[in-house]
Each structure stands twice: as C-alpha cells, then as structure tokens.
Length: 524
Image 1 (tube, rainbow, N blue to C red):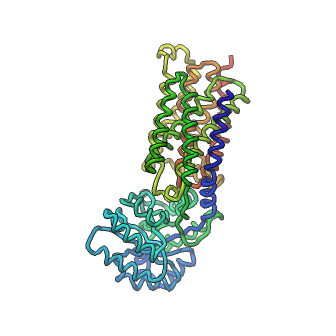
Image 2: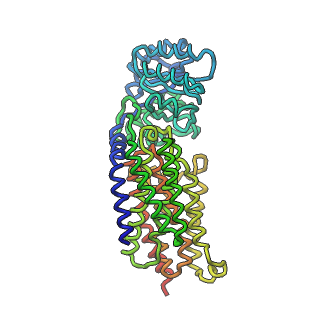
Image 3: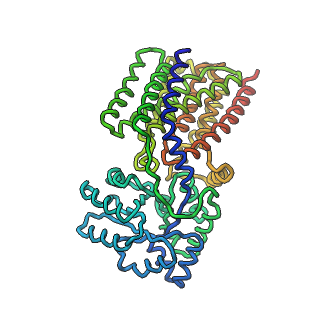
C-alpha cells in the first residue's frame, strides 16, 4: 500500500511538470470566442435575382452576415459581385480548388490579384491541398500563402490529402469551417440553428458556411442569421474567424508525461492481473516511448496515448469493483475510480496537445479499440471460471429484470447512435432542452447506462459476486465514454469537464435509485 502511494505521488509530480501546456490550451480555448457566418457566391447570386442587390446585401450584413465565399476559378465573372460585397464592408473569401491542371498557377495569380494587400484566409475546396502531391510545390504555395494571407479554412469532416505537411509550413494556422450543406441533408430552420450553435460552442468551428439549398431564399437566410445571433451564448461574439495560435508542449513536458504513463500502465497491470508475468506488458509503452524519443514520430505518441486510454477504464473498475452495501463505501469507491480515470485522461491530453490537435489536423487514433478492448476484457472476466448452469442456478427473477432493463437501454442506444440513424423527435427535443438548460448535454451512455450499472454492481456483488460481475460489462461503458470525451481533442476542455460533471452527478443519482429499487425487489 505504501509503495502504491509513492508511485501515485511520482505520477502526480510528473504531471504537474507537464500541466503548463494544458493550462495554455485552456486559456486559448476560453479566449478565442469570435465566430463568423459566411454565404457562398452562388447562393447569394440566386437570392439577388429577385430584389435590389445593394439593399439585400446591406440587410444581410446588418443582420450579421460576415462575408461571402467566392470560387477562385470564376473570379473574373464574379468581379462585379465581389465589388458590391466589398462596398458593403463584408469580407471576401476565396475558395481554391486543386484539380492538378496546368491552369493552377493562373488560378493562384487570380487569388493574389484579388486579395491585393488585404491579408485573409484561403478556403481549400478540393481534397488536395495546394501543390499536392509534390512537396516542393506545397512549400512554394505555402510561402506564397504566408506572403499575402493569414492561413487556410478547412471544412470539418472532409479528408484532405497532404494537409498535415502543408499546414505545418503555415504553423498550422487553420480556421475550422462547418458546412451547413454537408452530411445531414435538408433540415428545418430550427435544426440548422441548433446545429450551428453546437458547431461553435462544442466543436471549435468558428466559421459557418451557408451552402444548403434553403440558403438561396433571402427570407430563410435572414431569419437563420438572426436566430443564430439571438440564441448564441453570450460568451461568443460576432467577428472575424481566426486560426488557433501556434502552441504545443515542450519536449521536456512530453517526456514527463511519457514517464508518468509508463508508471500508470505498470500500476494498471498490477491491479488488473494477479499473475506478475503480465507486468512485462509494461515493456510495450516503454518501447513506444523510446521510439518516439528517438524518431519524434507523432504516430508513436498517438499509440502511447491509446494504451493509456484503454488502460484507464479497466484500471478504474478493477481497482474498485468489490461487493458492498454501504452507500458511503460505494461513493468512495466511485470517487477513487474517477480519480484513476482522470489521471489517465490528464496523461493523454498532456501528450496529444498543441495547435495541430485543436485544429483537427491530427487526431486521437484508435477510438474503436478504446470501446472494444475494455468491454471484451470485462466480458471475459465475467465468464471466466463459471458454467452456464451455475449462472442460471444463481440468477433470480429480479436479476433477469435488471439485465433486461439495462439491455433495453443499451439496445436502444445502439440502434439510434450514429449520424445516419434515426433519432426520435421526442429525444431530439429532450436533448435540445438539456443543452438549453445545461449548456452542454451529458452523454446518455454515461449517466443513464454506465455509471448506474457500475454503482449497482457493488450492491449485487455483495449478494451474488458472479452475477454482479456481469454488471461491470455495461458499467465500463460509462468510464470508456468519459475517456473518449476527452480524446475529442478539438472540443474545449471546459466543455468536456462540464459535460462529464453532469454525467457524474446524474449518473450517481440514477445509480442510487437503481440500488434502492434493487434492495426493495430482493427484500424478503
């Protein structure tokens, strides 16, 4: 026990040395609050066909339109409209498309001529960044871009070839853009407004691009802009979107986090497995850490962070999940599990920190493994050494009821998860209300499934240890989800903390209700 305390003190001491870069990230996320709404040239041209051009443009500007996006391939034919937009004091943004043609340099010359001395960001419309796949050409275009522009717009959820190399030449000066015409198809005005609010406050997307068909309607677009500004949290203000300032942890800070991660992995293995031979698995993070120190390859740092992310929920549950009916003991064990998980999270965000991650250019890799490995581990642990007959013999009617309730929750969640699956209107309304009341909506699989199942497992294991172990299978989902929340590295830390805080509080209360119902059901 004394040795464990020493290890924990060392881990905390090491993380305190790496914490300044995390604080720097927090500061940048907290202070970068300007957002913009821009319209494409074709949608603007469509709506101007039915009215007075100057009056309509000025009305949109007064409502809160920030600028207009023009294709760099049609600058000449759009020059009259570009002039009108500039006369209305709206921002002119050019959209570059790398199609690999011989006219690429001509397109670039048109961009330089149009921007003149006005520094601005360039939107990348194609899958290929300027100059791709030739690194020398990418260097050339990056140099030209730095001379007359600030940086680039990258559309969220779009894959770009060569973006990591190209953006590195620009110090990752990137504005995250949300395209309202992509992914979700036709939406109502209310849906578009809600989607915009989430993009700005939750995903660090500071530029909203109106490309959908509905935006060809002047009245629809005007009402959309007005509602966005009315409903946007007061923390954010209308302005000009800017890229995330260049920052990142020093090599020393990364080194301290790596050492903390190695010790954390060793302790997780010691807590998880009784057989000491499993501790040799600590060699894996050690080898990965040494590989990163020698090569500086980011993929190795991402691999190391994945190991910590997978270990955290397993470690948290294995170190705390023992049968007890004392509510105080259950609360303390829950707190201990949260502390273990939080330290794992802090190691991950200390390693994967900097502009390149906040801008979404580089990501946490291995989310599927994060969700599969802990679930598989606790499934095997629940089934290990028992027979089906033994489980059936020990299982009472209320156990079937208990697993049935959690099973229905889990099935429902799987069926309605994902961008393309159906979500009932009542749930959308409930989620929107939660966001309206709480600012950030807690995750369903945390407060409604994972945490209550974990808390209830203590009570059940006190009576039926083998049956209670099965509750750790849905129970680990909650802790996996908490870790996963913080691996969305483009989401502000303060938002992830708020969302997780709600999950912890609501999950604990629902867990206590489940324990009460269970105790009444088994009372003789």
